[in-house]
Length: 289
Image 1 (cartoon, one colour):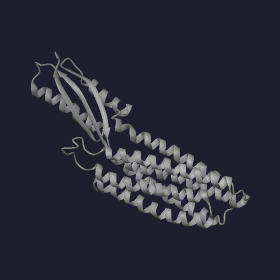
Image 2 (cartoon, one colour; image 1 turned 90 degrees about the vertical axis):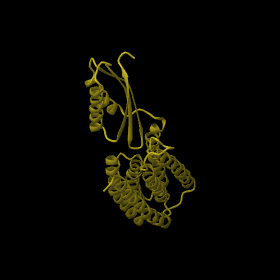
Image 3 (cartoon, helix red, strand yellow; image 1 turned 180 degrees about the horizontal axis):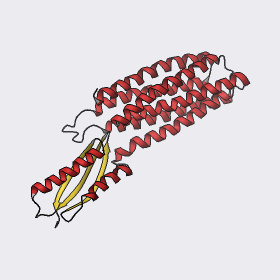
Image 4 (cartoon, one colour; image 1 turned 90 degrees about the horizontal axis):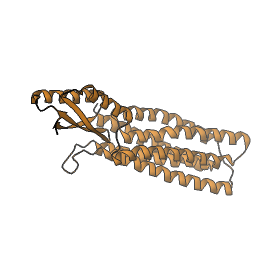
């Protein structure tokens, strides 16, 4: 199965699971009058929006380079991840606002058993879906799918927390725990949104590759430095899953052109074997320049 098919398939799975969870969470939230369950329904709705954005972005980002976008469309995934982060911030603000209203004007819960079952079910479903998303995201180096997986991973913890809170309310009768738990869910969501936004936004500014990847490249170049060859001005950046690497190769002008070409080709192949999805550009100059 090709990369785009794998990414599309797992993105569709995320859309489907989130749609189902939104429906059952809303039903349980309305039936129990629980703001913490409704907050989880809102969280799942944000997950659904994120999953739809991820599905669209993985399709668009896979388009080949063209005249208007000579470096490809990979950054669509980064834009997608950043938008998802902003949506999560908005959802968290809404949850906190509704929770404060409940604290000021507390209302008893009508039913907790249904809510506990629904939250446990949601947590289990999201464990499996988030693992599937993470697996494909890492193997295909997809920012959009990784952002979607992060949504669902957080949803696992928040759903489990809400289930625990509802159980405590059932046995203690402390209904104020409901909006308090909802606020805790919102704070976790804010943390998630910050991590996601930062991860997605950095490549939009053409930030360098991670230190460990640049170290691999530098070591390969250093290994081939000699009297006839010198490599300088290493620059790196990332667009979606594609890493762009460029550097200058200073070559002894007395060296045969074929030899210079072979050395540069060998260096490129070694980098490509060490780091996936790379596009390498080498500016060749003579040592006396």
